[in-house]
Length: 112
Length: 112
Image (cartoon, rainbow over all chains, first blue to last red; front, side, top):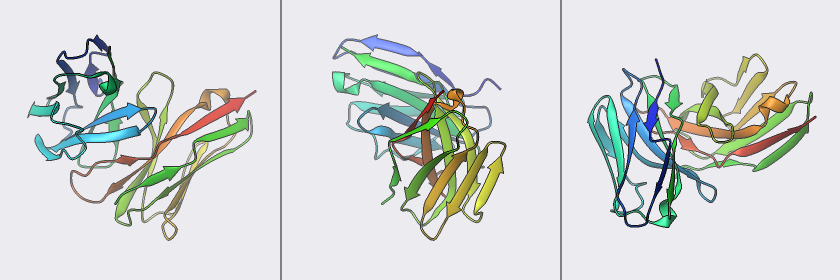
């Protein structure tokens, strides 16, 4: 298996633009997580899905952030409009019913 | 609420043992993890332990769990310069679809 695949790896965008981050979880994994990593706050859980259903989105910072999981093999995290303080590395992770959570390589977002 | 605490930095000499410590607050935590992050990379799962265990060994890595004190440690024997990275402790409750909650990470610096 190729592991958790995120795209793009790097994104530079101007303030106010819409940004869409993508994640393909490991096949067969039934839970998917979006995390944000910054120097100040470390790894923050934004939202997670179980069997494609959002379970907890209390970590989503504002209404500008939204996430979807239309099927078991794809999820998106959208920021609209983006702001400079959204600059961070965004990670997607997936886990099967068991215990091992695997992370993607992350998307480094820079909003200028 | 859930909280995971780690010391921020650890510096050791090559060949010495490293011990990275972590404390957590959620008594329902069932799975406890150690992840490694190298610069510019994603999180790599090193090892994990069930809360009904008090020790797990995997090659140079030894995990110790004191459930009474909610204290977890990772010992790296014969530390090498390639072990320099950020090490994250994480907890997860024993409920279907729950997320991992991370500490802020310990930066391990290994000097030759």
